[in-house]
Image 1 (spheres, rainbow, N blue to C red):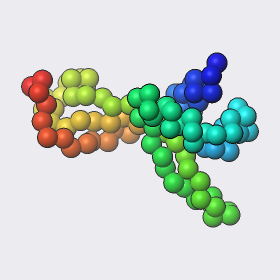
Image 2 (tube, one colour):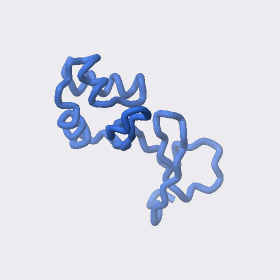
Image 3 (cartoon, rainbow, N blue to C red):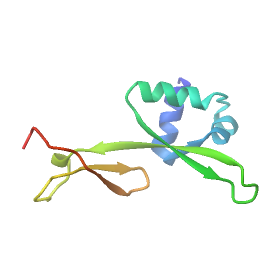
Length: 102
């Protein structure tokens, strides 16, 4: 299994990953480069800047998000916005101009 496959599996299962988690759990030393490669291959990975509650040190937590298109949303009468579903279960509306399918 490649490092990219390991990271994708972790993101799908756990929802997010940090550089520290990648080093400790998988001995992946260059998570930033693997994230760049995964983004270039079409994965929608978002960076969230965080601060450690005790030390105040800044770090990044990466999350994998997938986009749902209006026809994927059941029982919705008006489908005027693209909706993004993040791995923590939140649906986030994203405004767009129009849909050619409708």
